[in-house]
Every structure is written in C-alpha cells, then in structure tokens.
Length: 50
Image (cartoon, rainbow, N blue to C red; front, side):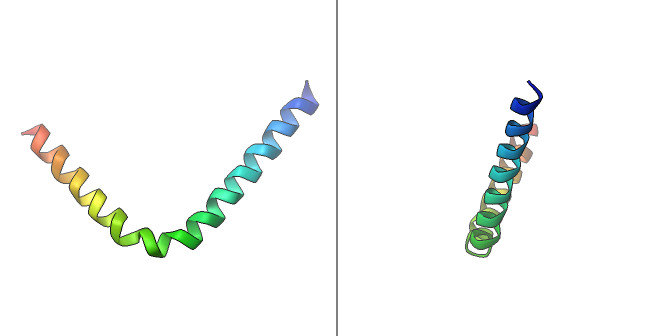
C-alpha cells in the first residue's frame, strides 16, 4: 500500500506541475478574461445579497 500512496503523490505532483506550467503560459492571455469574470461574479454576489 505505501508504494501505491507514493505513486499517487507523484502523480498528483506531476499533474500540479503541469497545471502550474500551463497556467504560467496561459495566464497573461487569460488575465483580461479572468478580470471580467471576477468583476461579473462580484457584481452578481452583490446583487444576490441585496
């Protein structure tokens, strides 16, 4: 079982590294989209609270 856990940890670490790498490459392109999405989400939350 320990070897299985280790494999899982390595897999999770590899996936995390891959996601981080993709995020670093894609982040500059997605920044405006993310900002607009965040603003829209915040506005929606404010509207729903009122």
